Image (tube, rainbow, N blue to C red; front, side, top):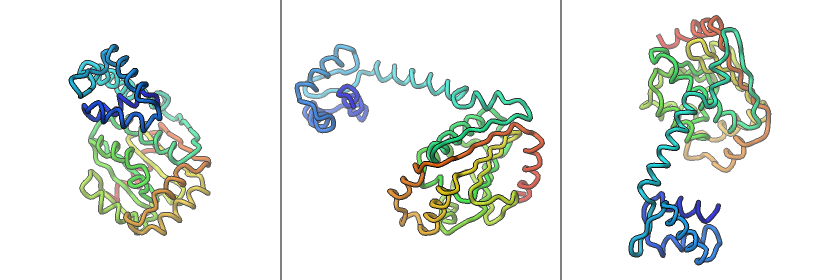
Length: 265
């Protein structure tokens, strides 16, 4: 991390005393105090930092400028971003994407599906048919983002529930979800996951070797408090072949919906 970035990151937490900032930045970047002061002078000259007495902070116009910039970036991603290839699929077409890790797969899946949700009528429910709900504890940031953006009913079927899954169900009761557990209407095995919204179907196939490690982890960790985060981090970043296929197929979606909706009547 550069000295500039470190200073801005620390000041994004609020204005600080110069001595406190100096100590933090020198420790994190291993540079001399002189180098920190030199960067502070340049940041002040650039209108990014303002100093008064012994305190230093970010200028309000810099903060607002960054907010506007990232707002434009967010708007671009919300309307295009990872979704352009998907939304351009004609009826009957499909798109397949291969990922190297579970982490990469989840990021794309969450981001593209969340964006798709915002483009479709809110009266249409989402169906998620998943063997296990590992998203809650393995990818908390993306899971929290997905939950926070919900404006429609989320219908989840957990096909192969284990004790840890049941604890997650209890934790999600205050969120916008309806659950059915221990049912498998699509006859999927434990490496297959599905998301369904309107005419769009996401089919996910996890790498079998990595998935076996994930299942073993879920079996051994029966409660959230016993989770070994280091082991979990290793699993979700384990190399493998993870396949995500998106179908824009009204017929396929209708057949699946007919099989699923009776569990939420």
